[in-house]
Image (cartoon, rainbow, N blue to C red):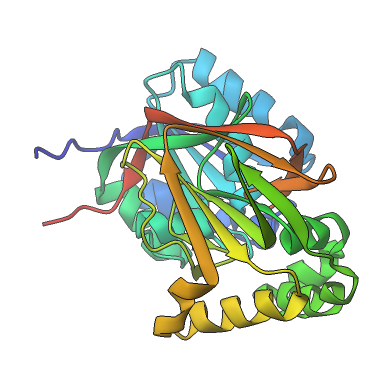
Length: 294
């Protein structure tokens, strides 16, 4: 398949409240200029709620590529506006887990990410949808929303993934399993991963998910006790054969999810929905900047 080159003209928009955004904005701008990217505009956005305003402004100005810097939550909130446009979505992974960048195969260091944006290719990918909200990589029910709603910002900022995992270990003491229904099948669950990409929390958990499969995947961690979640994560992180026996997977274009009580859903790290919901795939929804392949 022919690989199309990326535009050399772009707008740069960085979430200055992401873990590394404020510190690396100036360096990112300088590196992009050095690598031959003509920047129409460059903004370090201190108020994350205004980031989409800057994205929409760049789209209205017909920027051929918009480079968004931040964590998974920042990237996910920005992708919605690209769906109806031809502009390329380019990501600078400046967050804690950077799951979307890992799924794309992007380097996680700033120099490597900038090099990919300068020399990479356009790739057409699917997006996930929860009701009417698009997301780039993964959504989650269970412990992750509880952590996302309560984790202190400075803990993530200064300790990164280690701080996030430490907070999760603390919060699991308050966590309760739940009854889940996927379409017409009901089961006991301790976690649900709604996957467009392979990575969640910076770890590869959904190996069969793909950004261009034309399907959405739901992975249910089965059980009615907290230790089942700990065992599933351990087996997955260590790539044990037993990891497949801890989960059940569903694939489809559209599926309905409900629980015995309304539960929050974190979408790429931000709590943005509650059950019941309809999960869909938006096929070939946007163009992204991706590494060049042989």
